[in-house]
Image (tube, rainbow, N blue to C red; front, side, top):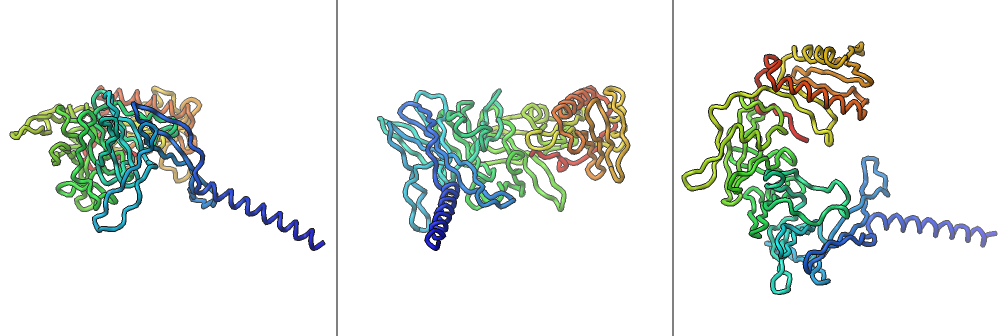
Length: 433
């Protein structure tokens, strides 16, 4: 009996060991390569993946996430990249062949690869049949933005592809000027692809990578999406972004114009009230062209300055970005009477019916067709919000919200209800997410 009991215990113990070993493999061991490859000339980028521990808020011990890495080879031989030598004379690790990012860039006949390790960014070309590796900077880029994307204007900031990396294109060909970001959203520099020239940004030094980009007069680039490049100068030597500084507890917003070729920048004032700007997302190249103009400075460099005079445009509202926050239409800065004006519009144009509010409810819930919506006025920031009722973000409600917002915004563009808008400072801009 003792022998049988020992055998049963041994089998149970072996089963437990197998479970632990299997879990350990999920936490750190690389899986087989995905097998996705992209070739360009003698170069090839291979996509690989593995799963690693990814404890969520519930701290489940065996929760994992899929992580993609890349390898660059030339004529079938994997290229390894040396780390930046340490300034303190310390030991440098061995060359790295596993990459965090890897793309072919440009449309030139001669292949150019842009790759990043955990600590460096490199450009790889070919000369006399051999790969030529050039270190661009001692930081691995994590995201990018075309300065001359669609219609020659800056595009979106891309950190992670919408699909898995094995589905993402390995060729970046949309433009010629590529702005690189680190993992905290700080801009590292601009790659001029046709010239194979890299312009490091003066505010991308190691002391600032863990915090913010700091410019003159203590202006700081807004992190991630709000701090993205928003316009490119006609001669393609400068880009425009937004910057913030605090005067006491009040934020002040200005434009920061970065001359990435000459390595300098300039702060240009912004009048949010006079320029009818109530949200960062409205800071488009078209908006900049309406209120600002590019001229040549005495030294020949480009210079951005405000146009004078400019007829004031009507105030309008804006829809929030559904991909990063709940669908909503916002009007600001408005006086309290805009609430009744907007609800009357919904009743007259869309058959809205007012529902009895719950105790303590500050919003007015409306029934419009099959869906319910809330209209809320916030006196602290003079903002009216129209959105699907809490917990009822159905596809039909979101579509109706967008349609109603577009119709009311058109009325505003034609000059309606402008007396209900009030004055506010640029620091009250609704931030992009």
